[in-house]
Length: 118
Image (cartoon, rainbow, N blue to C red; front, side, top):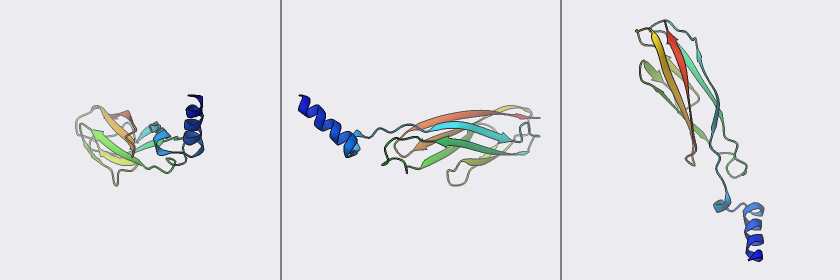
């Protein structure tokens, strides 16, 4: 039994066999909205900062995809990147805007920011 454990350890850590690779989920460190507060009908620039700290060099180059969501107002993001613009609705209030960040191995993180419309 001990021989098999040593062999498996050598394979996983020495040769980087794909079955031994662990995917870490992306982590959103911040989400910002400028300006906040915004006038009704105004344009807000959104930015989401995220990282993916996979230990394996095989996964270091994985790409992140960003998706933006808002129940009210209009949101536009080009090419699933880390920025978007949101056109505020006409009604004053506090609105939530969310960003989800995923990697190509199904890792996911979601963050939400409140934007005040005056």
